[in-house]
Image 1 (cartoon, rainbow, N blue to C red):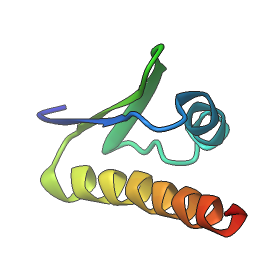
Image 2: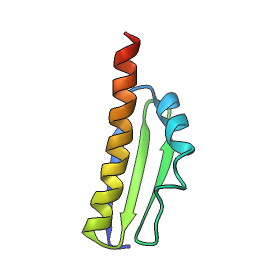
Image 3: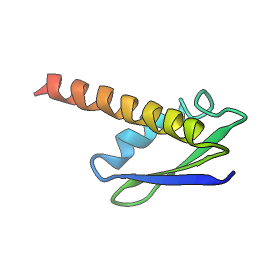
Amino acid sequence: MIYSAKIRVCKNPSIIYKCFISESKSLKTDRSDYTIKKHKDYVEFSIKAKDSVALRATFNSIIKMLTVYEKIEGLKK
């Protein structure tokens, strides 16, 4: 893997972690992989990819799922 990126989410780390841990296997491919770590105040995604297209695809998948979470949270209010 030659490309890497990290994303930190500081809002509701427990809920975010639960949402993503079940999806973690579906986003892994032979060209990219990611890990998710739950810390006290945030969740951190570490993405590793063989090429920039795979990095962007994994990054976008994570961002899309975060967007869905935000929209659902907005409906609760």
